[in-house]
Amino acid sequence: MEMNANDLLQSLSGVRNQEVEALRVAGIERIAELIEWLPKRYEDRRRFDAFPAQAGGGSVCLRGLVIDTQRKGFGGKGFYEAVVEDHAGGGFAQVTCRWFKMPFLHKIIAVGHEVVLYGKPKENGGKVLIDHPEFEVVSEEGRSVHLERIVPIYKNVSGVPQRRLREVIFKALEVVEGDSLISLYDIDPSYPKIKAFREAHFPEELKESDAARRYFAKEEFFLQQLRVVWRRARHADLSGRILGKRTGLLTEFYNSLPFDLTDAQKRSVKEIIRDMRVQRPMNRLLQGDVGSGKTFVAMCAMLLAVDSGCQAVLMAPTQ
Image 1 (cartoon, one colour):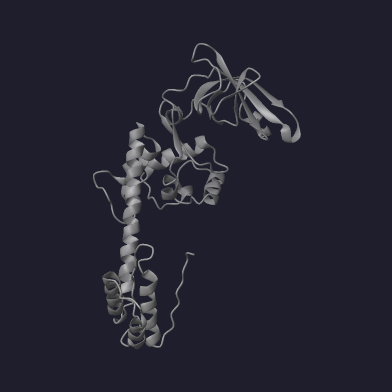
Image 2: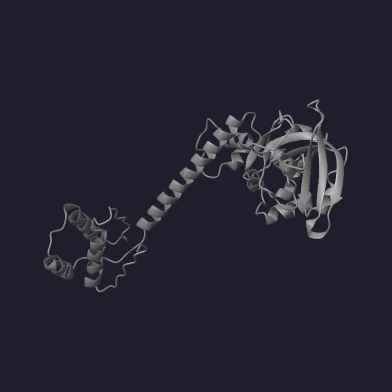
């Protein structure tokens, strides 16, 4: 059964109450908000990096078997250690992983577990170490979502592990009705929004995720422009005060100047006088190089306001 993007998360089959609450705390209450929780990066789990024989280079993504675990140290210096072996590589290479101040990990990572690790290796005492790697314990359940594909890695949600978050988003993308995701206007009918979301979360190739992100960037730009047009139309309906009919102060100011105005200054002042003499509030941006006389033009507008019985303030954010 298809679901509307605005449906609450608790209506999504298989999502537990504590997960709904954890997601709500993160600002995710509806299916649309869940689907909009885009990955921060990807891991290509169709192939994994070779276990490093020494430190060097960047972060690696490894898959191996836990062959030993220990809790070491005490108090604030205590840590949980797991030795992971690469059976797939045939050479039985090993890497030692350490997690500090996480004593509960002995309930999650145990000998015999298959794990996926992501982190930056270093050397210590002849061993290759990875401190605080991101990890997932591999199980047969849901293998099609978590292995043998490009896998999304999300910003952490407290109370919802990566693996579970990935499963819930995968489920939501399966059941959501595509048209319900379109908020105002479909910016590209040839590339449906639901397809963009599916390729952003679970791309077949990384270039698909790039295309999806371009879609969302284009949509965001379109919505920003729409808001600008809406504000401009709303502004046009506002009623303002007619100013600038009296120009005595401005004329006196002109006559006191020891120099002539530039053509650009004259044109700008003329346009401002025209804007101030109509009922609609003026909305104008004055641009110019440093020293081109922008402040002088602003002073002319202020004199017009004062001559009409109003007050004017010049705010200068720069020094």
